[in-house]
Amino acid sequence: MTLATWDKDITIQASTIDSIKHYSKFLNIGSLAVDPKSGEVKVWIGGVNFKHFKYDHISQSKRQVGSTFKPIVYTTALEQGIGPCTYFSAQEVEYKNLKQWSPSNSGSKDEAYLNYTMQEALSKSVNTVAVKVLEKAGIKNTIEQAKKMGISTDLPNEPSLALGTAEVKINELAKAYTTFANNGKHSTPFLIKQIATSKDSIIETFEPQISKEAAFSNETNMIMLELMKATINTGTASRIRNSYKLTNDIAGKTGTTQNNKDAWFVGVTPKLVSVTWVGLDNHEIGFKSTSLGQGANAALPAFALFLQKMNKEADFNYITKAKFKKPTDTILQDLDCEPIKKDGFLKRLFKNPNKKKRKEFKRS
Image 1 (cartoon, rainbow, N blue to C red):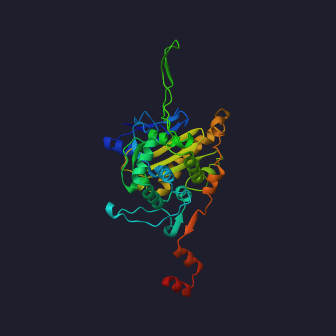
Image 2 (cartoon, one colour; image 1 turned 90 degrees about the vertical axis):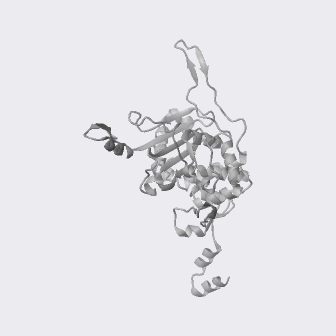
Image 3 (tube, rainbow, N blue to C red; image 1 turned 30 degrees about the vertical axis):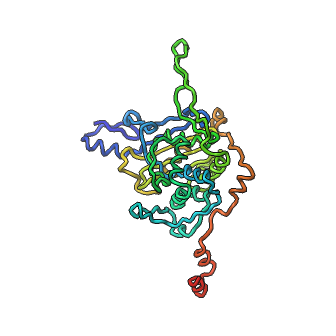
């Protein structure tokens, strides 16, 4: 039997079960990059090797999107009048109506005593805060907001939606993210501009499909870009700056699903929206640890290496050197707040560590 490896094909004695085991271990990828203004596809990578994996992860595969759904939740909150400097506690909450479901965070237990602004919570991808933002914004409002942004898949009407339990296709997620780089209007990814005969007679022309109405206000658009810039500059995707030394104008979001089954990264630049998924074809198999399977480690590098190469080619300057519009002074003022506040308990505990003061706190 001939089996593929990363380097070359090998011929060995193997059974059908051996073949299934062999190919089940291959990481696969789906990566789509589009012009957010028109939806024109610039990159379409459906998998690692079409000869052996005849399955297109862009248009066929539906996977849980993890934290890449959070920007839609936060967009809804802003549209519902919740200010970006509103503080949300990171304390875990148990949902009795969902069989004691309790979302948790991957950080230290001390995080439970912190209160986050929306910008800090999104950039650090704090799960407990995302669920609370969803509940305050309204689950039905969030589902409706997702539809306005181009998501047509039926979404679960439950709090876990905030953590990206919905299964969405890559091209659909890319469509939603084009809103952030196209003044709130989503554009549908498309591959073919024209079909012509050998004598250049035009048979068919395909025009960009862009939504007529913006999915959210200009103010919300500016705030969300600042929130997702923070994800790149200081948050879960900071290796874009630290490890890959990219200085381009970039906003984005990482995503990791339950049990490390799916790794995601969405990069948003003024002229390009790129969505990358990495995982195994068999959804029952995941990465053995979050450090390996998180979006920042498994999916982000594909975008970072791609952009590094583009930066070296002058032909791509119109993409790589493009800048986001500067937010207005009013927007900057709205975002000008302390990113994290400690709960009163933790404040007093750290401020007054001696025994006497602890007793005073106990009485309060």
